[in-house]
Amino acid sequence: MKILDEKIECISSEGMRSLQLERLQRLVEYLTKNSQFYQGKLEETGVAAGDIRELSDLTRLPFTVKADLRDNYPFGMFAVPMREIAEIHASSGTTGNPTVVAYTKKDIELWSMVMARAISIAGGTPDDIVQNAYGYGLFTGGLGVHYGALELGASVVPISSGGTKRQLKLMHDFGSTIITCTPSYALFMAEEAREMGYDPRKSPLKVGILGAEPWSDNLRREIEAAWDMTALDIYGLSEIIGPGVAQECPYKNGLHIFSDVFLPEIIDPVTGRVAEEGESGELIITTLTKEAMPLLRYRTGDIVTISHGTCECGRTLPRISKILGRTDDMLIIRGINVFPSQIESVLLQVEGARPHYQLVVDRIRGLDTLEVQVEVGEELFSDEIKQLQGLKEKIRKEIESVLALVVDVKLVEPKTIARSMGKAKRVIDRRSA
Image 1 (cartoon, one colour):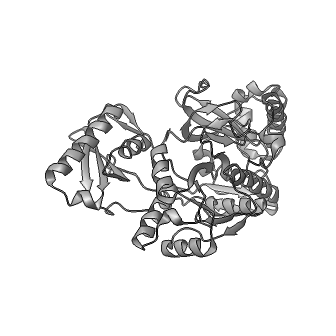
Image 2: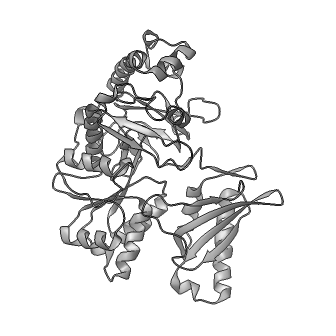
């Protein structure tokens, strides 16, 4: 397997730490001079640029949270004048101010480079045709993949999300070899293909680079079986750069995080204690080389583990796990922490259940309740009530054994749970309604 940037991706741990320290020192000095927001933050914590003498001094620096970005809307987080801003993206802003992120021309080059690395790690080459079904526009997914495919030298089909029948036609006619989209949309496209009389297993696709929502290894197996391709996870978030922060390789042993430009930490989200190797915690990222909007110790809200050492692919970059959950979409039900991904993993092991589900949380007479709505296959839904009751009971017992929480399971007809071409909406929480 060809490694795009062997000098960095196979660097020794000592070499990486030295590079990170040099870039961290430069970053703190840069922010002290150029960011009004961080000038105030650093003054509050009493840390000056010269105080960063070793990498462990990172913990002396203040955290940055999403609320900081919203509170400084629209341009208060920028560290360069507007004339140097080349591109601006923003979240949908459905609750309060949107989150704004910006890029200089050098930031765009950085984004293109890390995304080219990501596609390469997934097995992509200049000979591939990348069908980019992430949304273009203010969402960073589409343009991030686009820039990376161009940097790699691959051909890119900028089809964006939606138009599933057209997606499938062009995939077949163009001979697309890589698909980039959310995992839930990849599964939806396979369903649509079969309804059109097209066997998705005979598609030209070799690799799916799937992200923008948490997904389990069981869902991976479902997608790979549906398409007869390798399904790999990609990780990113707009505040850091967009897609291209970390990428899974075909050995599927964690996502390689580009730690030369995104310095990772894993901490206990409650106490702030640094997690041990292999211990789950919140991923914190410091952007070491960005110009327009660098972030110090940004709390991503994503729960992961991290591991070090050389991967079978030859890379020495640290690897983060697939997202185990989020600190902000983690449900707390009767004192128990529940992540939707835990339930998805159970459902995909139960024969007859489909990987389409919704969690409805409510509060009845002061007690939290969790209803798991699960689609079943057409062949099962027309079966006897006794068989459906048996399936419902099996799902309930499996979920309760994992969560140690009593749940109600409701079986629903095929295609009654809304499909999404973007991030799937898995949770309806009625407790605050």
